[in-house]
Image 1 (spheres, rainbow, N blue to C red):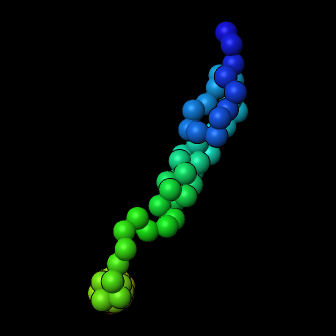
Image 2: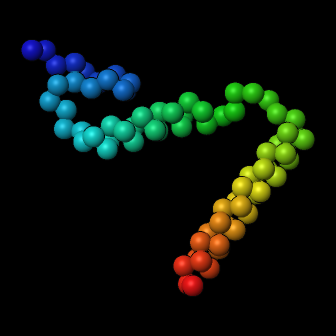
Image 3: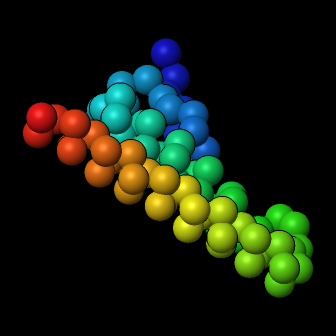
Length: 74
């Protein structure tokens, strides 16, 4: 059986010694490279709104963690 040479894509060839996790992480790096630059243009107001939503989400998670730890102590 003929072995294929790797082309840098997600295809592998027979006899590859890459582990399952290494293959999965290589998929993540490919996706991250593809979407490293935004595909759409955003106005400054949209950026501010998204930043506000991100801060709001972080605050909600912190409140949830705080509530969890205060309930455990009882």
